[in-house]
Image 1 (tube, rainbow, N blue to C red):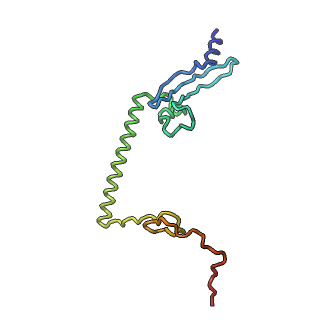
Image 2: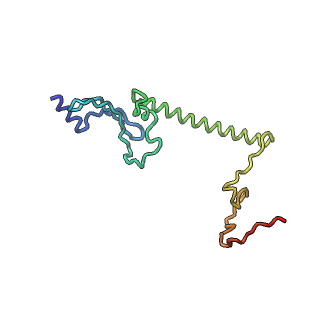
Image 3: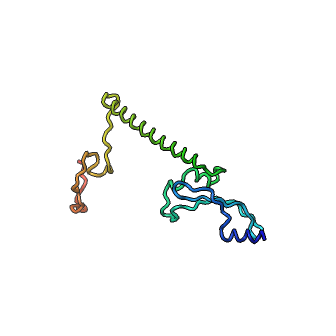
Length: 161
């Protein structure tokens, strides 16, 4: 009877155990190690049921790092809600601190430019060096050459005398 119940559970997918759900709506499951009806051992699996099941809708960050580590077997226990909240707070704190440092650095650079301690940055020319607009402050809206006036063989090198 036990084999029949196990076969029915495997057939209808009742073996997987719901482990948790993240704030994005993804559901995480654990399928324990089990034997098939032939006696073959099927190893344990960890899986995610995505909130957006279409692959083209997947974006970086669709699965939190902690859950990704659990799915890939880098950690034994699934993350707790407290751990997820603590790590999210930590990441936001790091972003704020990075923004503050960037603002302080910008103020310091501006002060150094004004005092003459550092040379002012030159404007970076956009485009390719072979273009007629390379190095100009403003790029003209009108084309400089359309290629309509080119005549093959019209230019000849000057002869050396």
